[in-house]
Image (cartoon, rainbow, N blue to C red):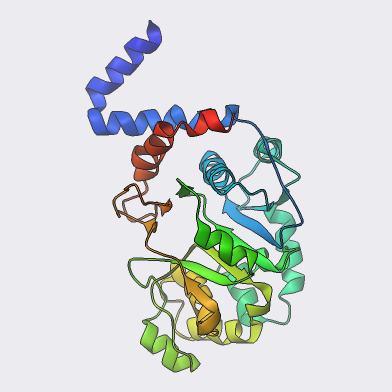
Length: 304
């Protein structure tokens, strides 16, 4: 009875949309903790690397389990945390992904100082002008034990199988999802002219695969020097811009995923394979739309 009164009070106070947001984010989201663990397999030729934090731990579990379930695949998982993880966070992740590796931030910082000692601008970006996303540009590669690094953001959900993604992963091909704009540190034409390559537009690094052989440290140093010389424009977009540069260095082997891999406010429909709910105002739809659709698909029941 007390729970019913609490929900009634919140509904009257918040209104329909805000109440649903409260329910999915503060109540329903926790149910992922009651689902069954998943195994991590080292023999698939690629690893999933995800960057998360204590605040987004539950979202990361939803993202990862939706990928594993709908694509019926069990790759090795490597979790990079931003320094906010406590022992309980690490234990939760290991309980849900058996055999996963967790890279703790403080330990990684010391290792990255050594790994980047001969790369002035990379070291500056990772250690001095630090941004959360810089771990995706350096730590993901340093701690990979596979030839292909599959990037998955914690605010991205899968709703069905992606034959595109699976085909590219099987063949070790680079791929990326589309953004609705070029969220880069520089305009693509300006950047391309400075680096001498044709920059691919509208790259989003939330769902992406990069073969290690495409990780050109010299090209990255040139790009990061350009950022340094220009006062680090659009600092939060540097990592995504850097990955657009790496992909652009090998156009013929970099593949854009179809529009069924959605982003932002693109409407969900029966053809939607995945959706990236980014921080442009659409993040709340991770709960209002994404969790709702997974509830309709009995997702939690299927992975329990």
